[in-house]
Image (cartoon, rainbow, N blue to C red; front, side):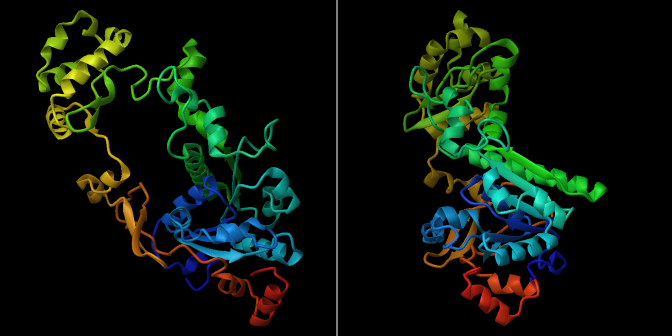
Amino acid sequence: MSNPLDASAANNDLPMSDLVVLDLTRARAGPTCVRMLADWGAHVIKVEATAKADPRIKGQNTQRNQPDFFNLHRNKRSVTLDLKKPEGHAIFMKMVAKADIIVENFRADVKNRLKISYQECEKVNPRIIYGSISGFGQTGPYAPRPGVDQIAQGMGGLQSITGEADRSPMRVGIPICDLTAGMYLAIGVLTALHERHRTGRGRWVHTSLLEAMIGMLDYQLARWTMVGDLPPQVGNEHPINVPTNLFPTKDGHVNLAAGGDHMFKRFCKALDCEELLEIEDFRTNDLRFKNRIAVNEAVSEVTRRFSTAEVVAKLNEIGVPCGPQYNIAELVEDPQVKHLGVTWKVEHPELGETEINGNAINIQGHEKGARLKTPEYGEYNEEVLKSLGYDDEEIIKLRDRQVIV
């Protein structure tokens, strides 16, 4: 696209190709939101602080070609801008006037100090959709606190229901609060965008790591708020349906979900252990739930007779949900995973052709993929500034004054 701030000059026909997004985010939650928009065609300009404005940038810049950064920031253009300088602020506001969406994860005091809050941006562009992610919310007693995934997993209750019973609370193996907050914000931004089609007005859309984590608790929270049932840690088991667990096999482990009474009968038939159906304590799911230790031991004895592949084949044939327990190296070699095309080929400056995690959404008639590599720091400075009317001499002066680098 010759003009990054003119969506009408789009060179793709993806669903969001008519949108311009200003990305002020860092870390993971905010970039996760923006990645969803970028993957589906939005023209994203990643506005990065200069090293003088934010010394942390120097360290971050050395990580640009690492898997994490490379995976998070594909399909974007990068500009550098010192928002603390009047010239930098003026440039940003010119960008705001042409944009559809802003996404940021500054603390409230920071965006107010920089004069880039929704209230300031709305004055320049009443149609702007302004998306914010924080640790604990934009207001309230915890609003000023820094928030990261680890803290939100604990305060959001997830660690209390993760891990083995009678053991220490356990962190989930991915930054689940960051990722879900980013996805929630993306949904919120698109909801506000849909409303804008009717009203012509923008909105401030915000969520937090804490709200996202509590939202993901789903029925586990409702168990407590509705009937006073405090969910415990149950390891790999399902909180209610038994047997649902990770069970040993001859050559590894298998996950299976045979908690419903009809599923348990199918399981027993498929693995030739129908004698389990005659045990009084195993006759219904309620009884199996009360006697879950004995049930798990009995099922483990059965699954140990077979290889993982045998269990998976036998149970899938009869309609009992099951599957192997993969590590990441194994999962990318699975034929169904390959068929789904969950990874995208990209060109890496040091590794050559490699693969990154793709987008889990499929839209009929549209091809997914990485249209733009992860940008170099400030790679599109000149292109963006010229689209705003700055000439070569003015750009040199901005660089000399370290408004851009």
